[in-house]
Image (tube, rainbow, N blue to C red):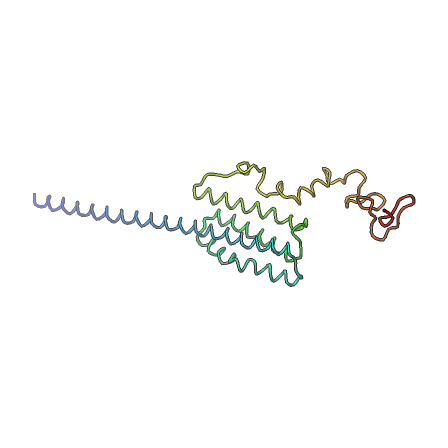
Length: 224
């Protein structure tokens, strides 16, 4: 009887100890997950904020313009000063594989925008918009991935009255460029692909540089 009591006591003690250890491990695991989730949320936000700061500075450089050498240095500084590279390394340490991938895509397109600005492309040039809009698309892809991981409600372009994330439909430059061409890249009737008339003139009767007026047509200097 005494042995049975002792065995029951020891068994109960072992069960209690095992329960305590298990509870501690579960609590530690939950705290680790909670800490990782908080670190991820922080670095996810920091990364897109850093990219946004660099993007704003690159747009300013493209709008103001500068010498080629000055643009190269200034465009590199735009990413460095915004701490894009630093935060990207933290992203790779804490982010899930999906977020790291979408973040890297956004980073690569931001660098493509930097190279374009460094090459001297102005904010109203096609060269700028050819890389700017894919960057915007990557930014929204990153946002969507982060919201999905953090269990936030999904977003769609239609929520904002848009048809796509890249912003082309809301871009005055792209709308103007698109209005000047017909489907298939054909020029409007009476114009060459460069917007010139068949006689070599420019829209409005202006002449190409170095061309004389055709018989029966007045040059620009002849117009009252």
